[in-house]
Length: 148
Image (spheres, rainbow, N blue to C red):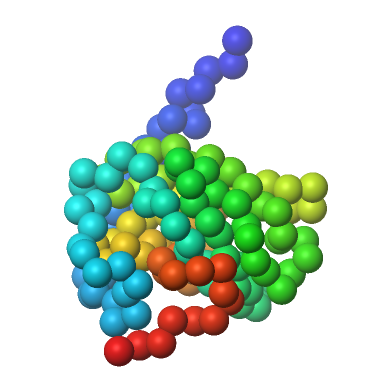
């Protein structure tokens, strides 16, 4: 049987480095949710729609994902290969979740690091330095929320 120890050590190191990504984040003016999120107490990803800004092939791609019962599915995208992506979130701790998205055309492993405004920084595995986010939105639109 293969040892999972190297994977777990890598996962812990990655999670530790991701916690630094949360420091210094400010509350987003485009917040669709009225209340602050206590990320330390999060046990699951909140139900609802999230507008993702992903960087694929050095270009920004918008994707709308609906979350229900800690499972996510792409419900809107202009990219045919991203439609139907789905996966289940796993709690890492302190507002950090791991998801393995996949469909017949694409696969991605991501850490979602939640902030108190309900949005999340998305880090791909492996991390190539992309600036990616998930912002809570009201519906399945691909329109970026207006800033107040």
